Image (spheres, protein in one colour):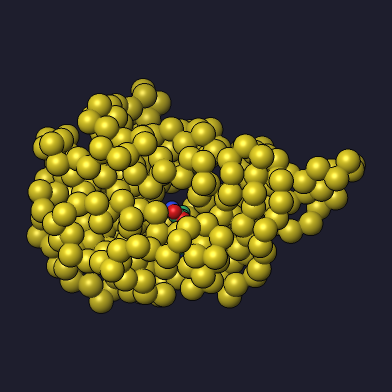
Length: 289
Ligand code: SAM
C-alpha cells in the first residue's frame, strides 16, 4: 500500500520514498528513488523541492517534476547553450528566460565575446533555493538576474539580444505563457537583426505535439528553424528536444572552431553536428507542418 504526500512523492509501506513524475497523456509515471528530501516549500508560483536521489544525485523539482540533477544536468545546460553560442559569430548580449540554478548562463559566459547574460526567472525563491542547495552563486559578474515573468519582460525588448535561451519548464503552471503564439513573435522582435533563439521543447517521444507546435510557431517568423536532440538519462524516455530559430546564421553551417568544448562533458564537434540528425517519426511530423 502506498501513502501519498507532497506532489509526486510517495512513501512505500517499507518507508522507501519515491518521487513519481506523472505523464498524464500516457497514463504512466517515472519513479526516482529518494534518499532524502532536503528542502520543500510552496512559493507564490510553484512547489519547490530539493531532493537527494539514489540514481541522479541532487535534483531541483518543481511541482513534482524534476528540472535538473547534479549528475546529468550538464547535458541539458551544454545543449541548450552551445548550439546558438557557436552559430552566432560574435554573441555579445545574451538573455535567458527561466533561470533555475543558472547552469546555461554559466555555459554562455565561456564565450569570450559575451558582455552580458541577463537571466529572467519568474520565481525568486527558485533562485534562492538553488543558491542554497544546488550550486554556488553565479561566478561571473557578466550574469545579471531579474525576477519577472519572461512573457511580460520580452514585450519590452526590441532588436536587442544576439542569443536568447528559453530554458522554460514544461507547459504547466507559470510556464504556460512561454508557449503562447504571441510569445514566439515577441522573441523574434526581441532579437538583433542576426539573432538566434533556442527553446526547450520537451520529450520528442512523449510530447511530440509540444515540439511540433514550437517548430510551427517559429516557422511563421524565422527563416531558419531546426530541431535537435540529446540524451538526458534522468528525463522520461531519455531523449530530449530543443528548437533553434535563427534570423541569419544557420547552425548547420556553423564554424565549429568556435565551439567552447574543451571543458565540456557532453558536447563536442561531432555531437554538435549529429544532434540535428532526427529519426523518421520526428522528421515525418516536421515535414507535414
Ligand atoms: N535548466 C535549469 C537549471 O539548470 O536549473 C532548470 C530551469 S527549469 C527547466 C525552468 C525555470 O523556468 C524554472 O526555474 C521556473 O521557475 C522558470 N519559469 C517558469 N515559468 C516562467 C516564466 N513565465 N518566466 C520566467 N521563468 C519561468
